[in-house]
Image (cartoon, rainbow, N blue to C red; front, side, top):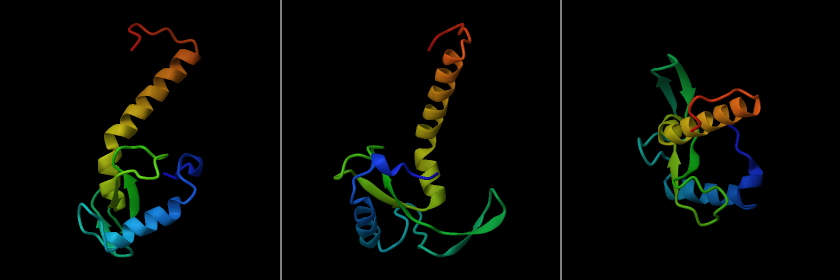
Length: 106
């Protein structure tokens, strides 16, 4: 998912690169290295590992945030619950805005 650069510090690219260098350009969770080719069990195809500096507290505006270097699968696992909550909240908001009556408003 592309990031919204306006929600990040202006020097985000430098911060992310520095954190990846500290991690030796490998995933903090599984050890996958940047640029390696891995087999995806779910999609049944090869992919190239691309590391990301992930916010552990989901606080993108904080220039001193706690960061982990994660590959795509580990990043998705880590953020899974947060993505689910956001999707659910957005779906509820859209339903209410569309005039749908909610039996139990949450």
